[in-house]
Image (cartoon, rainbow, N blue to C red; front, side, top):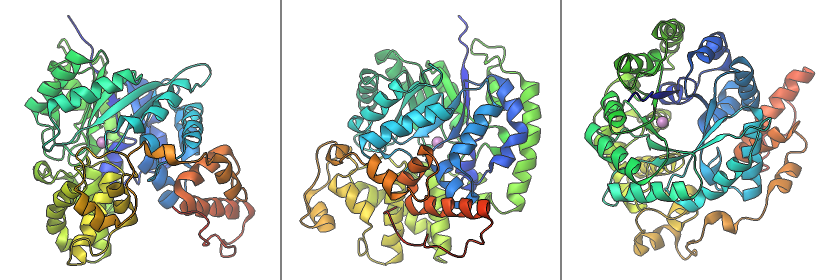
Length: 471
Ligand code: CO
């Protein structure tokens, strides 16, 4: 019996996040959108924390405007976003009222599929996001609520662990489930085992998301498909491989004429490829694509470092002029992770563990400097870690501060009103308030630039440097 495999195209989000630090501009996307729209992908992933951050911080783009433009230019495609549960697109936990508003606005502005994950796989951190997504509508249409399992390895991460988590995800009301292997840790036979086990226990479509870093992605996808996966995530070939995904065209070709045929038109994909080859050349010429990101590195299977994190570590070390310490930092990451209760390495825990590892190496002494965020993880501010943290280590890191064991957002008062007031001087819409909520000072700088451009001011006056909200 034929089973059509569906494809989620990641070229507008994860592919450029993995290969060029999320620097693809909207103007680079515009010419190819009509063709992407026509392919018939399951969805096109195009929005998420890093794209939002990069728009405001580096590209001087309003991320909401980007979303509305993509919506307008790809009227037939389902647009997908990646959402960090209670962290939304930012790096801390938000109160439920902000989260509900953000989910509704995302859907209203164009999102059709919301992929939600929690860095610690703590289901309590997903419930408000799931409920909000189930309530959200655009023109009477509801989004698909997809919940992702953050895949990782380590002593507690058995197949049973993932099956139990998948059951909780189904109970929580998800429409589909994603196995999110951001660090490229899946192997083909592990994928087969995992997909089979989840499909046997959970009655939801399964989407497979894995990166090419360690060179195994296409094999994992194929094994996953044979084991019952319904959807695979791929990237158009010019921005595939390396720390990105399996190439879309290759996977479509591999399945053509089989019971899994995607039904996607390969000649149309070749036209799209042509366009992205031009962009690829441009990014390489501009130095935006680092050759290291394009190489296969099975070391990921040892270091358990996702592509995005690897490029962040490299750029942090470059800034400190210590690029040569990358290997030491990569060895320190698993040690820090063990200390922190084995959090899966995905935003924000990947940044938190990564930055702490960089400090540990640069300072020449472990935990001589401890970031506020790392203290937060150890204290329980992000939720329950998969393995309890050693009380002695905790005491060393947070001193006598009280550990948190409830759902962290339960400790937060509603904060939307307060945020609205704080940025009233700058915000021109409710969407602006939500940008400000997540990126504080970075958003304010963007708003100021926008205002100055509008009124022809040189941008040198004003007090936008003033810290008015912690970022
Ligand atoms: Co990814």
